[in-house]
Image (cartoon, rainbow over all chains, first blue to last red; front, side, top):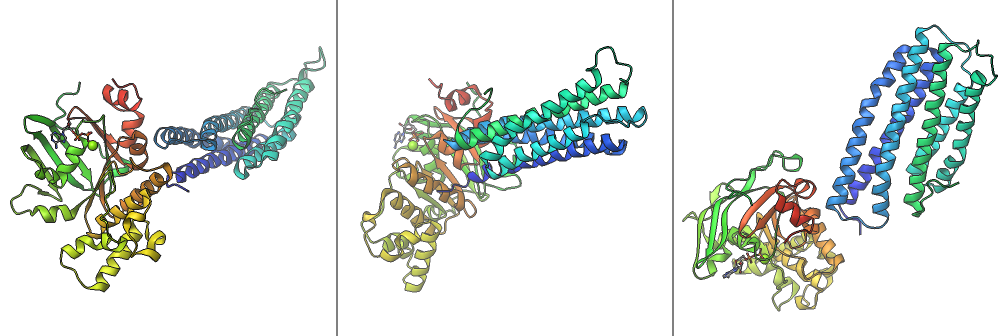
Length: 217
Length: 269
Ligand SMILES: Nc1ncnc2c1ncn2[C@@H]1O[C@H](COP(=O)(O)OP(=O)(O)O)[C@@H](O)[C@H]1O
Ligand SMILES: [Mg+2]
């Protein structure tokens, strides 16, 4: 029997999807701001963060309301517990996108930067992985969620490569500019976005199978 | 303990916003002989909303409910003070006929009480009492009421069978259909699901959710979970006093009174 209050679970899902799409949009736009030195775009990204914060609070209220009023059981309980974590991770992704936008502005203030290290590639993969994590949630596809857990390593590797290409060769730090240090912060933010995407996917696996795959090696 | 709860006013909250108060209970006190069962109750019920009365056994929920259509008039030695208004008019107004009040304010009881007659005869019972004999009108009222009570599909092929052959959940929906056939404005329900299994209970709750589009509903329930699921506002009573009345969300998520919190979290007593 489908009950009238099940509509509220649909609403909750829709809000999470909206949060996810917004966070991904912000990440993409922030990366474009880095590559094109586009301050206006960076500012726009920073302005998008409030809406995601609001959505996180709304999601939390919806979860609390559902838990208190409708006595959920079984997979509905898993969905509600996981939704709390997913909402939190998506909000953090939006924060990281904001950080990237802020660093883009610092870089552009110092003049255009020709060598962006492996950041553009890392950005492409981070967006792919986040897209995959969102699709895993939206489609309830456990294979996509599991793929995210594997692909997160690609982002970690590129983050390490960025670091090494600047500080790797001992003694030779003459090439390192202040702007390059900003790039390292951006690389690190992308690496975190990968981690949060992974967390989302772990929760998707929990919703779909009940299996807790966190901290697995 | 709550100060005599002389007027607990609910802030218009999202759910009830902009709705007229259909029932207004004002400083209402009630006695069975020397025993005071209700003390200075003030509470408004918005139209087309579901209000739940909760509280421990004997706190006066049913007494207040039965006063809304003056069912308690039938008890010896009763007395009241204060007032109850429905649609802006006191139900104690000498111009109000109790019979017509009970038509406007229908009641569904804890134990479904179908008459030992056919399903059809049960639904149209009150209409016949009112003198309606036109078969077409009765047929129409029977079908409409059973549809609204979400029972039509289950019984349409056996309207002439005895109502006593229905399941508990079906009987309770039949009693709701019987109440609806009177075209009431308000439906009172006193623990309507306490004898039903979870699936039948779910069906009645779905029905309540649909019926509020047309009726103002007050439900007494001993199940806090049920109050949480079906109602827009909840009133918590204790020892004949209204302790707290607010949106259901507020009462169950963050009540103001410590006693309410203790009761809903199972720490009472
Ligand atoms: N017909 C009656 N005659 C005398 N006392 C009654 C009668 N009905 C209820 N009471 C008393 O009034 C108080 C409130 O009862 P009631 O309204 O049935 O409580 P609730 O529905 O909350 O369990 C109780 O103390 C009960 O014993
Ligand atoms: Mg009672």
